[in-house]
Image 1 (cartoon, rainbow, N blue to C red):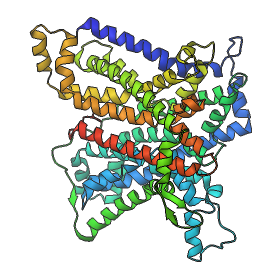
Image 2 (image 1 turned 45 degrees about the horizontal axis):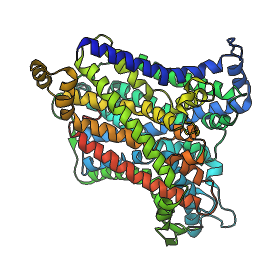
Image 3 (image 1 turned 120 degrees about the vertical axis):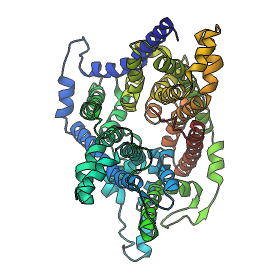
Image 4 (image 1 turned 45 degrees about the vertical axis):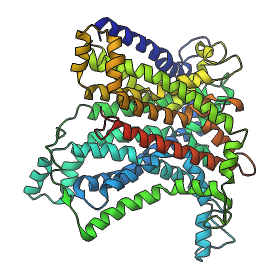
Length: 564
């Protein structure tokens, strides 16, 4: 790409990000610190900290984030360590199976867990049948432990993120450092604490930062569990009175500042740490091949985690198939009618159509932008390409709740982004833009990986024969990175289809609901609303599983999809 074209692309992308990413995020902060006459004030933020309800919500959100991160670490680190150090039976297959939680949005899984842990749910039925619980006074597990139920749901959904980060960090360690400690007589436990753990800290904290921000700003699971004294739900409830209530803006600003501090501190402490993380020698170094009972023990650990993590999925599937599931361990009768009803319900079908339109539009935007951005990052020589790369990755660090609230505030009548609302009140363009901004990093990373793996000599040959940069891109580069683009596009489309924060906040009218908003609304419906929501959740789960599998296959064994 010639220098002029690279500078033009960088300028255009920077403007788009300034308008549709930085502006919504910053505007939330502005509203939290500005009086109606434009005067700077800290009163709104002070009011949040003085209000015991909002203060409790922030503390609960922080506690959820910290507890979920700790629980996630306690699951992911032992698994990563076993996978790193030992070769045991079924390690490859089990390493893939424990990533299964990624195929189900956590608030959908919460539907199944809520049915299993309710007063009339499966757990109480099992305990009553075993004679452990008095049938006249069953325990409401969720009423007594909503907080820990949300922590468990977050941990079971998010541990694959931390597992992949820690595994990658361990795989990059030089095994000679652990071997040297072993040769000096350092016992395994001390070696783990003094050598392995400190060297893996960059990967641990990178994954933990993502997990913390996700759990700290999680909206769907607390809503399903009726846990209202938490900041994200208080922001969601505050949408009903945006015009005269500055509290939601102040809450969102505080959430954004805390999230930014977590990422900033992580980057400052571990972003430049490279000690012990040089590329490993070929081979697995100190890996030990296990046999017999020790191999079986490792296999059982991975299998147990997979089975526990699959419980929300199992609960959703059973609820979607149940015709009579009340005070019993398993449904007494099964039926497929809910699946048929879910696809034939006039409330559901339009939401599927809406999600297809929103996700397709967002993916198309991401593919166009992702290709040209990746071309600038990999093929150009301008000085700003590293900054551009960092800029397009920022949506991964900013909570979806913050951006969604910013879009909502700026799309009110008379505000700058009101042009994204259709004449009939449709938020289609607003949701497409929101989805596109949130999912652009997937496509950019995939396209960058593809260009890094392709031979630039082929493009240079085309240019030497007189082809312009655009024709070279269309005729040579795109065919070479087609699989990578397809993989990134599939992931962007799939996660856009099942986006939670943007969907719940930005879609206000029934005819414009996407799938996730419809699932949430079905939960409050009488009759078979829960069963229809579960059936729609299973359709979403199957769709996302197929999409992730297809993306992994298209990306190939070189790891192109996740290479950075």
